[in-house]
Amino acid sequence: MAETIEELKQKLAVAIEANRQDESKRLLDMRARLDNEREKAMRELAKAKGRLMGLAFGIYGHPAVTRRNLEAPRSFTFTASDPFYEEFEAEYKKAVSELRHPTFAEIDTDYDRKSNWLSSFNPDEEFARVLKRYRDKYAVEAREAQPVEA
Image 1: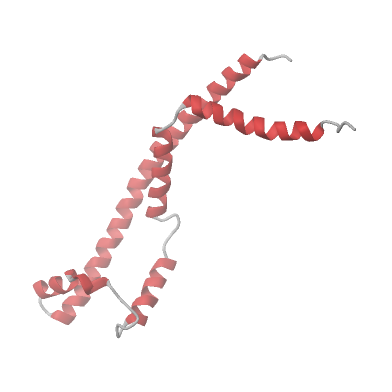
Image 2: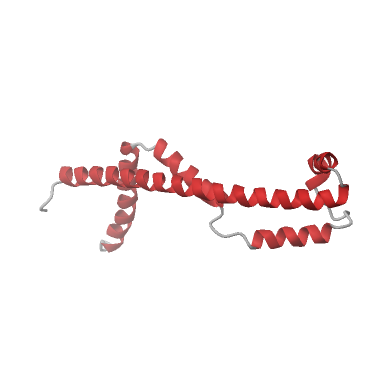
């Protein structure tokens, strides 16, 4: 065996740290992308709110009355008994189906998962996890390769 167990352990420790640093860099890039996507999503939401206010103004005729009606708790709660439920449901489904993926929410969730992993990263635990994974894998293969004694 050309490399000792200690040299292999050292190489694994270095590889684990390099992986953590790479993930940290990717997380910074992801943060920038997330900020960009948030701005785009908020801009689209602002446009939709403006359009909604304009449509509601056409119904209620006064900005204060329009705002009051749109702020009512029941304003965005639709049930099958509402007279225009089918129209609401169709537009909602259409809007969701037209979303680009990954959505801002999907990117945000992925960012949070990776950020939590990095903040709780423990090199010793990661080292033990990698060793266990390979020991489990190769121990099974080694047992299968051994001849059965009769």
